[in-house]
Image 1 (cartoon, rainbow, N blue to C red):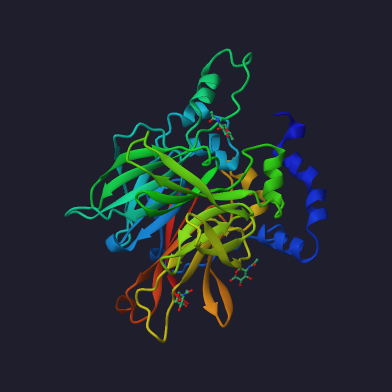
Image 2 (cartoon, protein in one colour):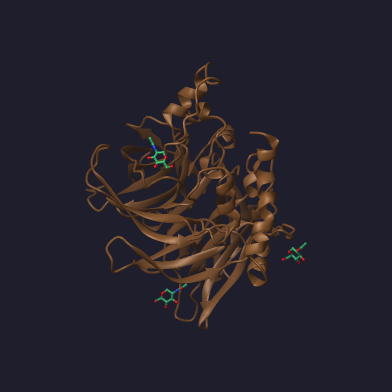
Length: 431
Ligand SMILES: *[C@@H]1O[C@H](CO)[C@@H](O)[C@H](O)[C@H]1NC(C)=O
Ligand SMILES: *[C@@H]1O[C@H](CO)[C@@H](O)[C@H](O)[C@H]1NC(C)=O
Ligand SMILES: *[C@@H]1O[C@H](CO)[C@@H](O)[C@H](O)[C@H]1NC(C)=O
């Protein structure tokens, strides 16, 4: 790529377009969400025992709490080199050869132990370059309770790998599709040290997958965070809030084999950069994060089969990513700490460039949102300048029994990011 066509220069070329389209409050909000003038700040944690870096959890983009087993699930890229050389969601396509050998993996983290276990993946031929995940109960599990784990996997297109490998690649045209993303589904018996690969799912509508929301073992939703995979239009899509070309796809699986039918339809479109998905407050509520817009949408399954409908949108003051819902198990009629939890970056405007640098530093902000009067109250739960947790993309709250804390309401807050070295667990006051 010539220096003139570098993403940074293209972004500069686009700036007048951005300013021309956004003005007044819209521009102010954009500048604020992207943190153009924000100095990252760090929450002080006085007791060192209240801040834990969970070992062996490198580049884990998503995190889910599975309450019935008191464990968290994540999928991690593991090797730092892979993500900085290949990660299509950040338009990094440099090293498909290394990516074709990438061995990311799935983690189970004990909420009581703060230890991560790497699951052995049975019947699975990699690579695994994980992104968003979801976990659903296996309703047919016999005796041992089990779950299905869905993982967005950014596999490089084999034709692109071959092209890069071949010594003659100067003479033959570059394949147009560099990546061949898919969803991989695993079955895991709770407590076991392995997960068995069930099937891979590919479909032309699954083009730039980001996150998954599983409804059942055979039905899920997946976001495509962008329409364009790279180039100038991709950058326009990032900076221009009117670029509402991202989609959420609903997928139905007919069987358990790779060749069995996959039915897919567009469930929702018209959002800017729809990104993370999460289960909400009620069984029919779906959380959708518009990352660059810093907006969490509360959606429900629409009367039209397979569609989603946005009911309400909540604006936060940073970029966000994968929304989660915290159900307070110790809620009383007088005090309920349940709420929506969002994690994002303090300086989103530079994260795509910065993420390419293994030594880069990107600040993080974590929010909790609760109802207040007829609206919503957003509270900053935790923030960091990037030295403890870089570019947070997800945060999950797990409450601590009040009796263990002299009656006080506390929780462990787990925070992770797509280029963070470790998952962070920090004990906080549930205020
Ligand atoms: C950082 O946060 C602390 C505590 O919230 C606040 O007192 C301080 O002013 C902040 N610093 C900056 C530079 O914003
Ligand atoms: C290549 O990507 C385009 C969209 O980006 C898609 O429509 C097409 O099916 C892909 N082709 C192959 C062979 O994967
Ligand atoms: C969750 O839903 C219930 C019932 O609709 C409502 O009373 C409660 O305020 C909601 N909680 C949050 C955090 O939105």
